[in-house]
Amino acid sequence: MTSVVVVGAGVFGVSIGRELSRRDFDVTVVEQYSPGNVRSGSGGDTRLHRSSHGDVEWYTLLSRRSLALWHELKEETGLRLFEPVGVAWFDSGDGDFSTRSEATLRRLGIPCERLTPEEARRLYPSLGGDDLRSVLFEPDAGVLYARNATRALAQSVRVIHGRPTPEHPPAADVVIWACGAWLPKLFPALVEQRISRRDVFFFGVDGGWSGTPGFCDYDGPYYGHGELGGFGMKVAPDGAGAEVDPDDLDRIPDPAKEQLAREYAARRFPSLADAPVIGARVCQYDLTLDTHFLVAPHPAVPGWWLVGGGSGHGFKHGPRTGHAGLRTATAE
Image 1 (cartoon, rainbow, N blue to C red):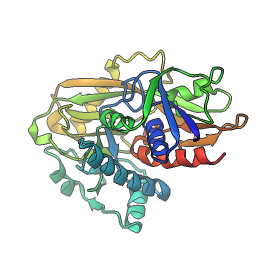
Image 2 (cartoon, rainbow, N blue to C red; image 1 turned 90 degrees about the vertical axis):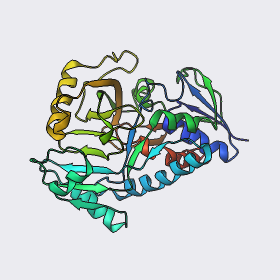
Image 3 (cartoon, one colour; image 1 turned 180 degrees about the horizontal axis):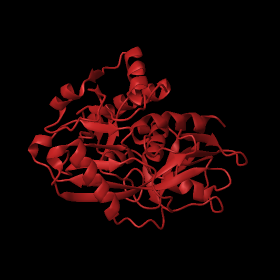
Image 4 (cartoon, rainbow, N blue to C red; image 1 turned 45 degrees about the vertical axis):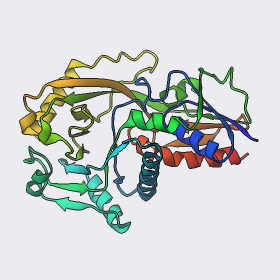
């Protein structure tokens, strides 16, 4: 039996481990903290799941397949992992992301609706649309409970504690290094990723915001969702943050970023002008230079694979990456 060690129990790592275990590989996942830990890129409370990816059709197809797999995991575990609240794309700038996305969605037969700012007001108790050109609404999109989903995936694999390095690697026929923000630290000569800080805020809102759609203001740039899971309403900046070391990152929210989030919330959702911030997270994004995922063999060590670059839009695709892991383990 082929032995596989997956280093990292983030959504990519446990998805790959789960798929390989189901195909009768001898799989061990090694994790320095625990699956869904808040210091990892997969340890957030929530993540948007949407099919819009501009005109990159394969990402859209990947997202749709992953959504089906998330539903399968929900049925298998009995856990509530996904909220089908939809996602609205706010056209507030001159970009054409939602236009390109709409063309892709319609070509693939994926439900979507183009709304005027006035029509979009039905989606939220309060919506400031003076600067909006239009809104693209994806009714089949929604929100994943990220930490719970990562832990649910991890239930079907053997997870042990450890922090292997290339100098002291695990012994296995195949080693898959799925280390998130730690990958470029382990392979600095091979992996070019920008590890950047993100501050996420949750606002206290009344019950009228329960179950309202997620939102993405692509040119804002902000994203978030309404009241879900008792966390409050999420408002998160999506601009480039400062480069950080995941081991040294101070996870205390930045007051300046909080003020910017407050200003955005008041402008886009006017009734939230005086809403209190009831929670916050500081996490990191790990993005490759072209923002696409990294799945590649190590150029010098047979049986080693490098997997990463998922932050920002990778979580939703997690279950489908398991099939990439299957290909890597059988490629040797």
